[in-house]
Image (cartoon, rainbow, N blue to C red; front, side, top):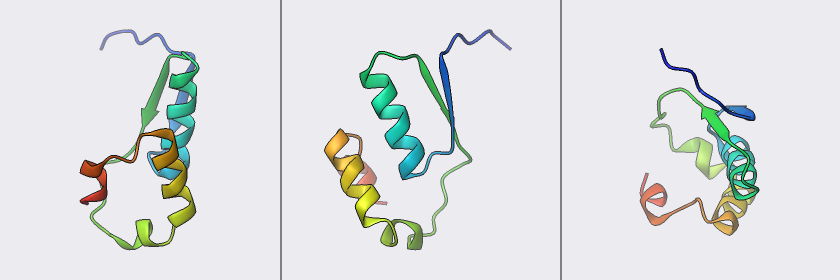
Length: 68
């Protein structure tokens, strides 16, 4: 295993974790986002419209992600 130099570790790849990682990266903070494998359950995105609008505003909710 190699050494990883980072200033922040985000645990969770949901909307909040992605938003935190995106904001830190935009501030030039070395960041790692750790999350489990993708879940195919579409109900989670249906329940978080405000979070998805935030991710879209941050530029990380791309057309590719919208297709899931």
